[in-house]
Image 1 (cartoon, rainbow, N blue to C red):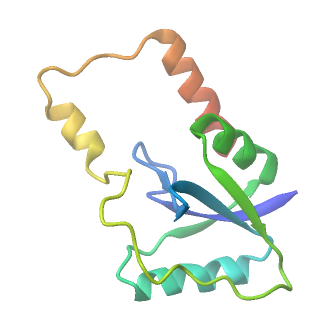
Image 2: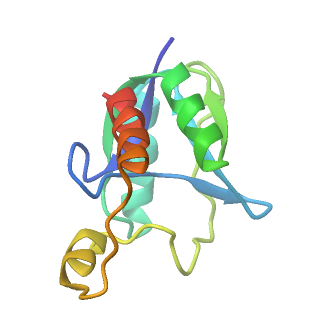
Length: 128
């Protein structure tokens, strides 16, 4: 099944997926409707988040990503109640939009192994 998720810096090296935190767990919302995903993105922007892009992805790929990252997921039905972002935001996110720049500037940067690179490559290709 195709679903819509919210991505920051889509199709770049520092791509990030929007999650909500419930009970100290990250949850990815998978919207059945692109309109619902767009509305949710605009509500996030109204809360001073950067505006994410809405991307269509196979739900199985997102579920596999969530399992690998130890995230929860939820499908937001197309004709259900309007999903609304939580009123409070996390003070410190797990995602750093300048991570790539910081890594490149680090003198002590460690190179990942070939196995780690292959694993990352498979997960990213799965998102496309």
